[in-house]
Length: 199
Image 1 (cartoon, rainbow, N blue to C red):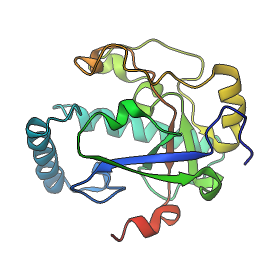
Image 2 (cartoon, rainbow, N blue to C red; image 1 turned 90 degrees about the vertical axis):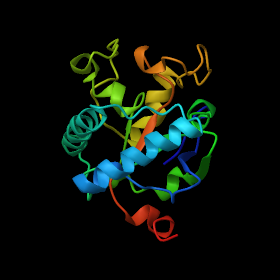
Image 3 (cartoon, rainbow, N blue to C red; image 1 turned 90 degrees about the horizontal axis):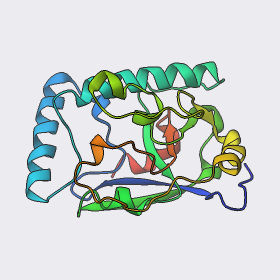
């Protein structure tokens, strides 16, 4: 896939240094999920992390992932997972700053098969538009409620540009502000990241 001149040619996965990359809360059983969310919240209080895993976080996440998967299939995608692995187009210093323990790895877009890779503008939580149901702020945009194919990204970036990654208001209360910081990449298969899942 040819990238436009101002579009990054890679995607970045951010993860906690205390855990391996490409862990997904949606892959856990309910018992495992309760334990891991408790650990993440404790770790966040001690670190301190700015990530928020509130009481209804998983409800919002499951709704978001189900809608995103359906839209990707409607766009011609062939997901192999029920929930994707998450990356960011290019890089995001804002996302990296959510936790002092954040690590990153980069994958060229050319290594991500288009039939199992989707994108949302911005992140999927905002783009899938469930925020109002959870009393979260939401401002609709024409690129919301869509799952884009990788081959659509150059035209998308050319039309709307890249979201601003600037930390304009700090992290305090960011979940209560309209959120458009980056383009999210979703990989709906283990195969492209298989060697990262083993270590």
